[in-house]
Length: 371
Image 1 (cartoon, one colour):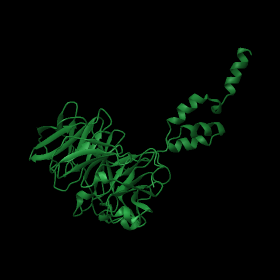
Image 2 (cartoon, one colour; image 1 turned 180 degrees about the horizontal axis):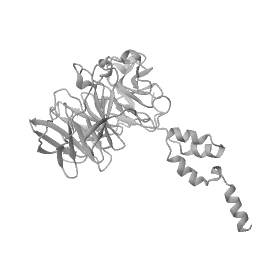
Image 3 (cartoon, one colour; image 1 turned 90 degrees about the horizontal axis):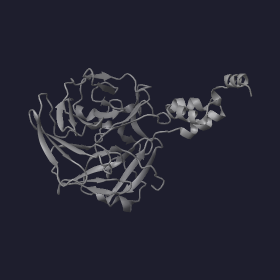
Image 4 (cartoon, helix red, strand yellow; image 1 turned 90 degrees about the vertical axis):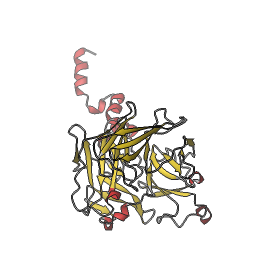
């Protein structure tokens, strides 16, 4: 073949003739929606797009024994033990049941990467529990008295760190750190010059993001702890403005999470019908209200919240609250696309959102063995 013929053949080639490796590289970087669009171009693009398509999994909602949403279809002999926990998958609207005697007498402090941080008040014992594998990792004892506590990643990681913060004065906090395998906790008192109070009963609002711990105070100021530099600061970021009159239990309707390196704050605490989502602009030190979620789905709970993209079906652009109405049918959620709650009667019922005994947790990769 002459050079001229080779050149003419190359000019006649279209997008469908791209090498498979290049097509895989392109389609694997697309969002779920764009991947689906690419898959209808032709049969070859369809096979490549399907091979690299990733649909994220939503977290599961974990229920505690004796909650009002318990199913009546469970074996009564199991329920009487008080060790039965329910895990609701909102994407499939299916509930799984697990008996966890390890949690007897424990308080859940935090959850991340599929692990629970548990605390026994009587013995001051702290330990990690994976409810799906039943693996337990013990920690040094520590008296959690009006502390908020979190950890950075799964305790099986060498970079896992635990952090507690306690308000001990008008401008002083005690920060304690630990890691799996340590023999004791390390506590240091830090001074700050901005208001940072914790109220009794305020649930955790901790986020680990970009290597830093962010902690939201009861008056919505942000404290930041750097575990490498071991420094504590309160950011000079004025709290976001919430339109509408605050409800009596306003603190119950606030949730904090992170998404792709950004700190997000969800307000569902005023008498306006719709939740508000704010994004922290650290460059200008302000909270920006988000008009759209851009395909992100939030799963809000008091013991850590989660964000997801590329979820299937109608779950995009929603905030899912930690409670189920009509067990096994649907979670309470708010759609930013349709500007309404589901079910619709929950729009002004703050109590419908407030379920501190429930939490969102990362599901196991293989859950075919669960009932």
